[in-house]
Amino acid sequence: MRKRILIIQGHPSPGGGHLAQAIAQAYAAGAEAGGHEVRHAVVAKLGFPLLRTKEDWEHGAPPPEIEPVREDVAWAEHIMIVFPLWLGGMPALLKGFFEQLFRPGLAGTRIEDYTPLSRPLAGRSARIVVTMGMPAAIYRWYFRAHGLKLLKRNILGFVGLRPIRATVIGSVESMGERRRAAWLRRLQALGRRAR
Image (cartoon, rainbow, N blue to C red):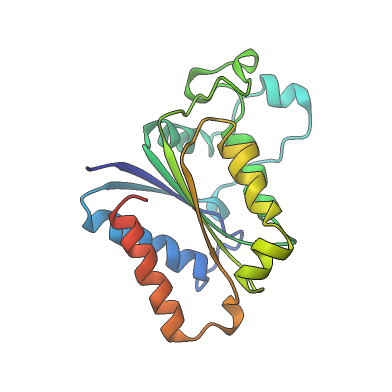
């Protein structure tokens, strides 16, 4: 079944050559080969301020750079997010992006509509891909993947995305070309299936 997919590439560096960028490209190539429609949001290329007050969160307007992405979120049936793990969680720029993206007004909601039951994005699914220097098993089992859980439960789950699937790719600094190519093929296959 054909889906509308939004790929959010959350590496904070606008320069090239990062694994997160290659993953986003591989996923998009697979999705397009599978007949899905794809749009992209590259967080590092968006200029937006951080939210600093409750007043701004509740009553301020999203910055002009964020508004097209909010429209893409409303359009999408599946959202893929990729980012590197920094200090146990997502980079600060990506967190600031989500704060702007999911502020009241998304999908027609108001601040009083934001409750754990409102779920303005219900009916949409998500895939999170996290890259990191440490082995993935250590992140999942020793550190309990708290940064990933924060994104899944407290941000994406709160706005209604479900199911939310995750792929954790560890030891990226020591990753050889064969292993990198295998991961890119795997993400391309997931894109083809919109999963």
